[in-house]
Image (cartoon, rainbow, N blue to C red; front, side):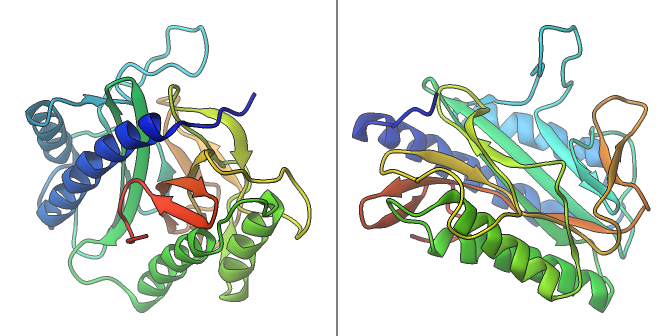
Length: 257
């Protein structure tokens, strides 16, 4: 069931989203060669605690199993697409890194992610990052009440594939609010004029994911980290968005509404 948020609920999500966006920007600023991904994780926990928010991902379990995510932040490097676990891995010049942060604030979740380069990166990686970010921005700018979800998914797919990259189909965006993952699923591929009608009050985590090679993915032995099957570079951007009567509102402030 898809929940429509009230103005009070949106206000709380906006507050949590803005805190999360500020934390994510501060984490992005500290990324450099020689830093470990665990150091970024420790800073994330410190900043979330300082802002009286809780990490959405830590101890998260996708089902009733005992498999719980062990960190506040997902840190994915190079071919790692999502859910990379922070570790003693040292970042090197030329890496690309995705920081994915979920925040729980006063009963509501928001979710956001950015991919950036570490030091000097290749032109191909710069293009991959730029195109994936552009797919998110274009999707957001076309959101409005009564548009079909397939129209948004198609825009993401077209922008990524037209530039020679692959859309990841096994990982999708999602509704968000009182739960970190709610209905509906938001694929990064689709056909115009298909899918559910988006309505004012819906809140969505839209997250284009692209690879420089194969669209196929696999899961590492840690049970969490999803990588491209052919070890090609990957990029991922995400924002939490509210649908409004006349457009949209970005709750996590990657771009301004």
